[in-house]
Length: 71
Image 1 (spheres, rainbow, N blue to C red):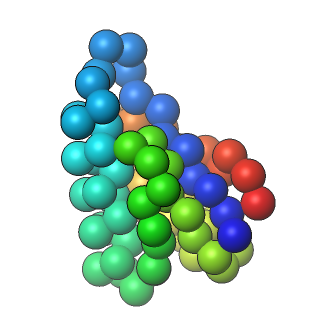
Image 2: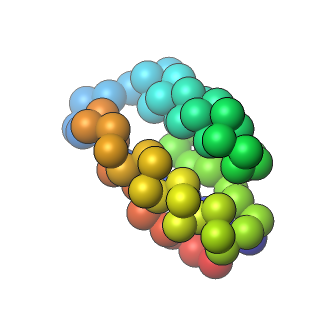
Image 3: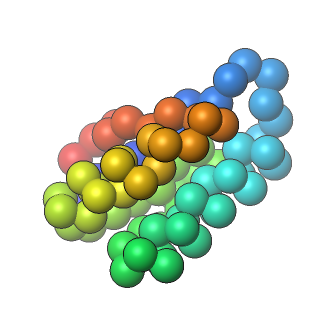
């Protein structure tokens, strides 16, 4: 299990963060990558191959950065 942690610019509220993480989860689902939203700032993935692909897909968004928080 891998946790992806999203980092947002200062001053963004919880609802904003939750909405963007949910949208990122939907983007991954459309690419065939299954993830679970654990918190308003994190997603959980189960496959290392999916983690690499997810990082490549999601880090292109200027609204946040994504890093692996744990494995």
